Image (cartoon, rainbow, N blue to C red; front, side, top):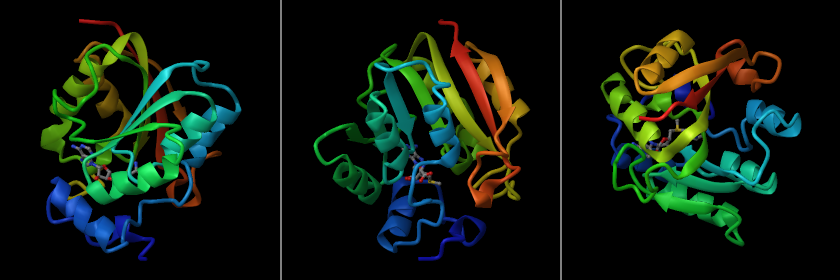
Amino acid sequence: MNKEHELGAPPADTGAQAWETIYQADDAGWDLGEASPALMHLINDKLLPEPPQTVLVPGCGTGHDALAFAKAGYECIAMDFAPSAIAAAKKRAEDSVFTCIEADALAADNGVADDSVDIIFEHTFFCALQPSQREAYAVALARMIKTHGEVWALSMRTKFTNRQPYDSTPEEYVALMEAHGFTCIEQTAMEPWSHQRRKGRETLVQLQYQGR
Ligand SMILES: C[S@@+](CC[C@H](N)C(=O)[O-])C[C@H]1O[C@@H](n2cnc3c(N)ncnc32)[C@H](O)[C@@H]1O
């Protein structure tokens, strides 16, 4: 497997088939083989709202982050539209410790009800979308999250503006989300906790949804 794939060839487009092709080729270089170390810091240091809470992980890939939430006592929903990714996540879920949904996270009929999720955890999903999909991303998250629910997003800087992983600043992310009913609670540089390959590039953005 080419573990540096995220700095190598991008998928031809951002549709499900493009991602599926990469998973089938065992070339998902973004897959850390473990939950995000930054997420483990949030869980281990009890910085997230205490369980039981419903957590959605959109663009979950093979489910490492979802498993970490489930093990910590959260009701976790892992969502991805690449069939091989969700199949791997299902295997990881084993005794159904978390729910796996194969669906387009941006679609209104993705299987997650309106106003039903307490926490949305975002890790390498926003940067996987084309910039033209960002409005739809914000609309989708605002639809699924409860009023006063929270988005915990690892905003990541990258080298790329014309292919994934697309670069964005934490400020751009906050501005987008604030235009859709969220307020920013805090931004935290994750350098001490980030994975080696992402050091200095990840900022935790914590947002609360104020309702429609
Ligand atoms: C860069 S990968 C990151 C996966 C995972 N978060 C991780 O860190 O291992 C982006 C993931 O988002 C998924 N994805 C992209 N667009 C999606 C969409 N509209 N709905 C659901 N999943 C999507 C891809 O299939 C892929 O698994």
